Amino acid sequence: MLEVKDLRVVFPNGVEALKSISLSAGRGEIIAIVGRSGAGKSTLLRCINGLQSPTAGHIVLDGDDITGMNATQLRLARRYIGFIWQEYNLVERLPAITNVLTGRLGYNTGWRSLLGYFDAGHRQIALQNLERVGLLHRARNRADKLSGGEKQRVAIARAISQEPKIILADEPVASLDPELSVQVMSDLSRVAREIGVLTLINIHQVDLARRFADRIIGIARGKVEYDGRPEGLTDAVLDRIYRFDHQIKPVHTIEDDEAEVATA
Ligand SMILES: Nc1ncnc2c1ncn2[C@@H]1O[C@H](COP(=O)(O)OP(=O)(O)O)[C@@H](O)[C@H]1O
Ligand SMILES: [Mg+2]
Image (cartoon, rainbow, N blue to C red):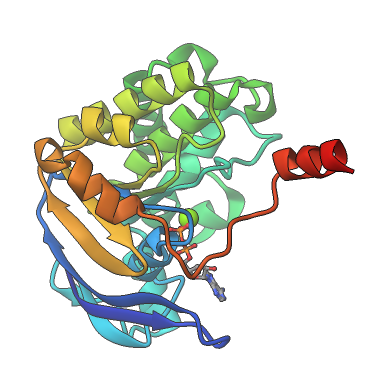
């Protein structure tokens, strides 16, 4: 279903964000990708989505090699890739239902697409998916009137309306408080299981990763440090994933300032 082979990304400034990532994943798997900030998690998802072209390596989704596709081919491939962002990426002034319908754009044709006109079949799919995330009653509410948790659930409904082969979520709960984070992770993993779609979730909360994913991939400094069941994520493994990188200088903290003031 998804094959990532020896993926390497070096940015023009010389930063090697991914060193040689390989992984394969099958239909219906819910995979959490954990690691420190700067480990390379977003770069990996951006490569799978075709937003970032790798320096070397391949990404094969359902038999199609994403790497090396031209713009037109990528646009077609992205139709089947649902993406969920930390900051929701909804059109704020439009109702929830219209935001979810944009997930159907890839299936709409010609003048309908140009006019933003969706027929009853598309509307029914969008409404069903809003219902799946418990937001049918909010269908007509503008996105800017929804809470953060509701916005992310609309984004989930939009992603599944694409009938995706894969869902990629980059820190989907990083803007939410702990209680809403649990709810959104619960909705995302439940819906993904119901429709049996492969889902990759970048997340920095290890407890949520353990609770909602079937498999955890730990990335450190652009390399896979762990790939396995949540139960295998022992303290020793976590230490390897999150261990202090001695090349990074500790940041200057407010406590340091206070200590300086106190000793002055
Ligand atoms: N466009 C870019 N140009 C240069 N360096 C980048 C760029 N994007 C990310 N990086 C660097 O690549 C590394 C991995 O970043 P990222 O994938 O965003 O990590 P994560 O999502 O795990 O926090 C970091 O060192 C980051 O600073
Ligand atoms: Mg990131």
